[in-house]
Length: 209
Image (cartoon, rainbow, N blue to C red; front, side, top):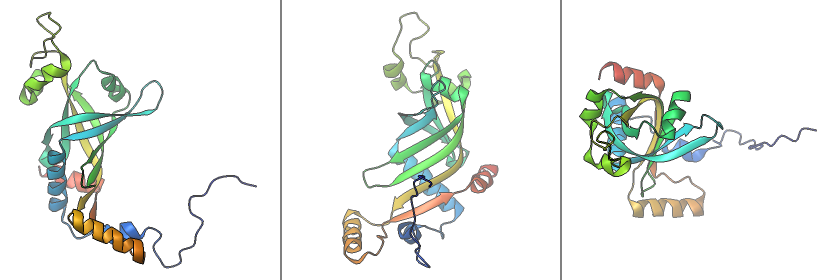
């Protein structure tokens, strides 16, 4: 007898097994609208969680990262990094990463991408911020001082492959009402616009930006 766990053993017939997604998925937004709304959301969120794979254990690791800039019309994300940090080693081993954003309204975004680490001084100086000194420190040797010339400073460019995100269609009060009604009636709450950006979408957008 098989002891494999099954996560769904219910025949829902012609009813959707995941009515929440069906109620909130947005199929009407144009590619431009989807990209621009996602870009605005990431900018307003500012900080995201970058998930990489540990090169020694294979475990997934996440850390908060401040969004430094965007390229290619908003689909490529740039983050500052200390090139001597562990995440650099992880990305050298496996360049695939996920960047996730979340705000207090329950809006969120998940970006799947492939990373490259840029260390050329022109790029570093272009996106340099004096606040980096607070994170790298001044080692007092006249070289590793947290300035734009500090060789430890690099840029992680995350080239988007796909993205999924959810933005709110109602205010807090409206969301509470929708959830309350759903709790009573069993009707899925319509509180978000769930949007998906495919790999083909990203390629189309990048080709013109």
